[in-house]
Each structure stands twice: as C-alpha cells, then as structure tokens.
Length: 111
Image 1: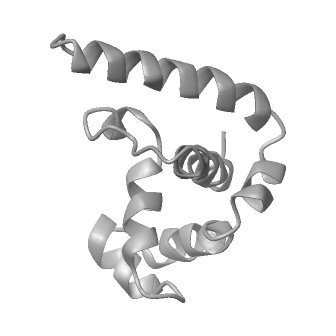
Image 2 (image 1 turned 30 degrees about the vertical axis):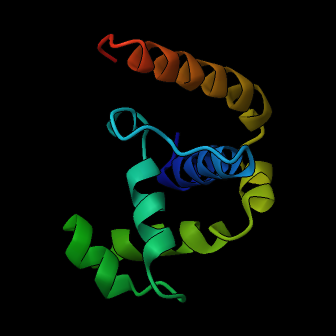
C-alpha cells in the first residue's frame, strides 16, 4: 500500500472513531500505520506546514511533500475513504478489533 493510501486509511480510521465519539486507545496507536501522523496533524494549525512535518517525523523534503498532499483530506474523512476502495471492509473489522482491545484493556488484560 502506498503512503498516500495509508494516510487515507488512517484518516478514515480516525474519522470513524471521532464519528462514534470514541478515542483510539493510546496503546493501539503504534500498531496502526500512519494514525500517529494523522492525530498529530489534526492538532497543527492549518494549512499544515511541510517543514513541521519534516521536523516532527525526520522526513526528507520530498517525503514531507507527499505526506502533506496525502493529508489534504484530513478534515474530510469521506474523501479519504473514497481514495481507499476497501476502506468500507477495513472500517468495520478494524473498529471491532479496537473495541475488543478496549474491552480487554478495561478488564485489566494486556493489549
């Protein structure tokens, strides 16, 4: 999967959790590709600065521009979802998996 597709997927995942009024558990974020980037970018002033991406994630200039372009859908999860055709399937299964992780974590088990 290309970085652009991964960013679109991560935007979709974050958008689904926000739409459900839930937070992605901190312990799960490192397991999800690009979700940390999306969550960080949502906290930044818009438009997102390429230099801020470079500094935060130690990226080359070219990679920072690619990530910046991919993050343009940050405030439109529906557009991001359209860029990942299988996002509808991933969305439900990922949401259920994360819900299971939350239940397991709340019960005192390791995630």
